Length: 267
Ligand SMILES: C[S@@+](CC[C@H](N)C(=O)[O-])C[C@H]1O[C@@H](n2cnc3c(N)ncnc32)[C@H](O)[C@@H]1O
Image 1 (cartoon, rainbow, N blue to C red):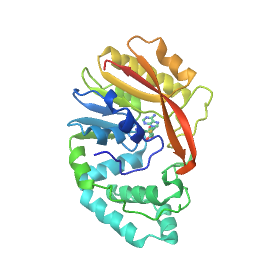
Image 2 (image 1 turned 90 degrees about the vertical axis):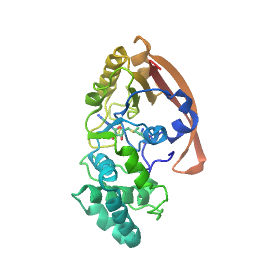
Image 3 (image 1 turned 45 degrees about the horizontal axis):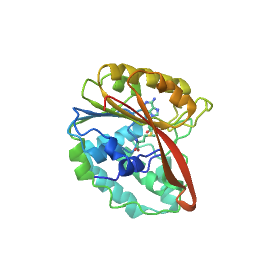
């Protein structure tokens, strides 16, 4: 299963397409503390997993797929049937409480909002206007298959450090944090809790502890001197720089080259 069902900032579809040879063939549990759209999880299809993210609506969406994919499917089809400009803004203003409704709203807004990216403001509110895409059902839902895959996953809403500290020898830890760098103290985050430089330091320390426990580690990050300096002098970490092209806002004339850093240990 290659594609995720969500468009997510920093999504790792490019990684599974071009860098999957870096993933370990043998491991015990798959652990992903910055889950987002879950590209690597859906690509690897692990038997056992711990999946977490600090974004509670995102985690509710995964729980809805795990626990009631049929209810979610029904709800999303209702959104698809009713979709128009006015309906978009009605749904955007709603605050549903059940897992299925939270999930259907999130997927609906993710697919129809401007630029297809679900982001919340500092108050934790989703305030993106409607976009030009009107495709609510993309055919990539595959909720039933995803639900089977998520059956043996422990899914949690929490900060990354608690999840990393649970990783044990032979577990595979895939880490894809927001790309905060030292100069950008006010990096715009994915939830109302911004990811700061101090979080990058906290992450490096947690990964060093995990590496000493012989956890297999793969992290993607910004290829920036401040990030490289965080890992260069830590024992057991390998740093590799990779280039990739990406289009900006789907505009092919705006293709830009990005350089990313891949940090690994015990693989
Ligand atoms: C680059 S995205 C992950 C993308 C994902 N790998 C994919 O392929 O879609 C980073 C994720 O980290 C989450 N995040 C931000 N701060 C966090 C924190 N302190 N603890 C855990 N997750 C956090 C964000 O909500 C976001 O989903």
